[in-house]
Image 1 (cartoon, rainbow, N blue to C red):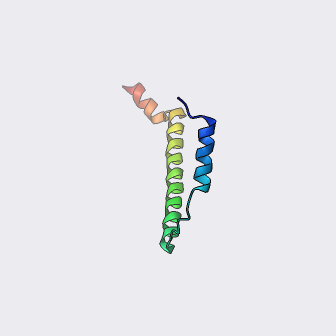
Image 2: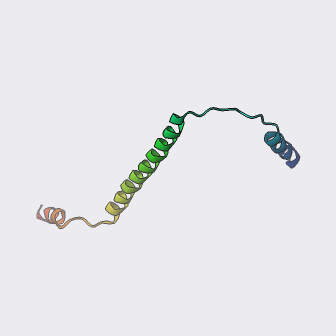
Length: 74
């Protein structure tokens, strides 16, 4: 038994028109916390991208000539 379009429509109408105002209070520190979270997420994303790009570069880079000469001498 799936959800019919009629039930989905009734749910949408009740959700939109059946809500009451929240009268929520946001103090000034809340904005500061939101800004810190956004800045932290951007910094973390940039760090992850940098580390990922280094792994990709190391995967496709050639070995240095020093490491190759040490292998041939043994």
